[in-house]
Amino acid sequence: MPDAIDMATRARSSKLSASMDGQEVTVAGWVQDTRNLGGISFIQLRDRDGTVQLTLPKKKIEPGLFKELTTIPRESVIAVRGTLKANKEARAGFEIIPSAMAALNVAETPLPMGVIDKVNIDLDTRLSNRFMDLRREQVLAIFKVRDALLGGSREYLSSEGFLEVQTPKIVAAGAEGGATLFKLSYFGREAYLAQSPQLYKQSLMGAGFERIFEIAPAYRAELSDTVRHLSEFTSLDVEMSFVKDSDDVMKVVEGLVAHAITHVSRKCTAELSMLGIEPSEQKPPFPRLTHEECVRLLQGAGKKIEVGQDIDTDGEKMLGDIVKKEHGSRLYFITRFPTELKRGTFYAMRLDEDPSLTGYFDFEFDGEELVSGGQREHRLPRLIAQIEENDMSPEAFEFYLKAFRFGMPPHGGFGLGVERFLHMLLRLPNIRECVLFPRDRVRIAP
Ligand code: 4AD
Ligand code: MG
Image (cartoon, rainbow, N blue to C red; front, side, top):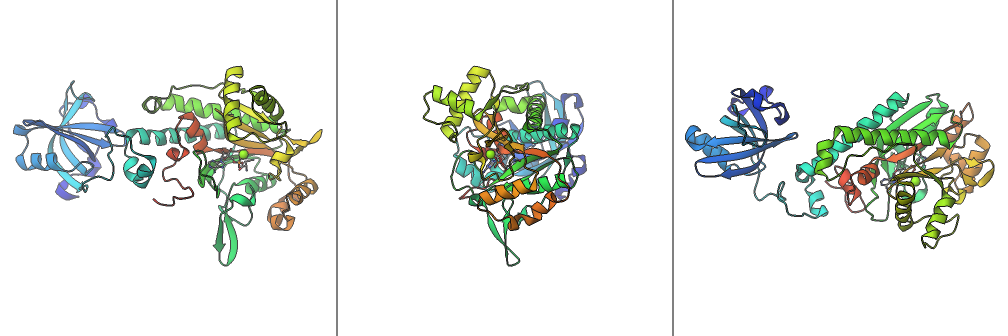
């Protein structure tokens, strides 16, 4: 380490306080801002937790050190040793008077984008300089919320007896239809990036794992460029055995989502406030509307749509507003999806009383699909028939179907888009905001 500043003694800004008045401390981070007022200079030094103020009274600081600290370019990384002084006028109630510094990495000028400047920077420029963009506190806040959202989800699922697993992402067959498959060359054979852990989740039910979840990347070659689709997203998947019907699965969906929102609301008050979001707790059970009821609500609101038809993006948004007005909830289920609309979902169980309907549901947040799920077809002859109906060959799925020949319990589950959850919870304009390094049709770097 240059200039003998011992990093072992380094404290992050959140560990320092006015009560440490007079103590020798070491801090390190990014030079966020420097103000030179002649006789005195101030530097805001930033780390992940916030900023500390370095105060440099010119007369009391060794001239070489004063010059180096006050001229180092913004966003350089430095380490500083100094004395902590309580000071009611400093933002955190204390300041640090430096006695030594080490310039660990001097930033080039000009910066590709500002970190604290109040100007609006377009998303594309931000994503192209994402390492810099992520230094901004309101951007970092999204990822602190993401961490809490996943922490709360794991806490809930673990307490409900779900085992966390990881399944392959290089796969031999698609689970969600051919149109969005990414093909890759795998030692001379064709393979795909997993669209969903669907087939493996079900295999694990055959393996006797009973209740599992996975939080992992999923890949979709989405051709449309929208504010809610990514080519690589994080799927929170759940699968559970011995369900009686899709209702059992829906209870886990609403329990999980409500718990995660409460966890975020309690843990991230500062981040939510920075993002302009009121903490809220959503109490299950959430409204359950059949697909047919939803279509009728939309018809009533003047939308041109027939029972059995797909609800388009505009319709989904309209429905979100109607349900909020009539049921007072931002979260709701659309149940009993018509078989025709879930045909590609060959693994979905159809209702015995009416095979033109499935027990499948979507779970919506402010008119955006957050979750799809339901009870699966565990009876082999029916599953094979449903694969064939989709013009797919059961032979291609033999690795999956085999598990249905030797003891497969009734089961069901769901997939939740983690970025969709954040997108809606934080009311962000674009889902790309919720991914560190988003992948879409045009972007594979950084
Ligand atoms: O609705 P999807 O396609 O359902 C499945 O993958 C099933 N295997 C789930 C199951 O267990 N039955 O995807 C699940 C969720 C969607 O509701 C959405 O939140 C998210 O994953 N999702 C995407 N998020 C961002 N970008 C994309 N391109 C997404 N595609 C799906
Ligand atoms: Mg879906």
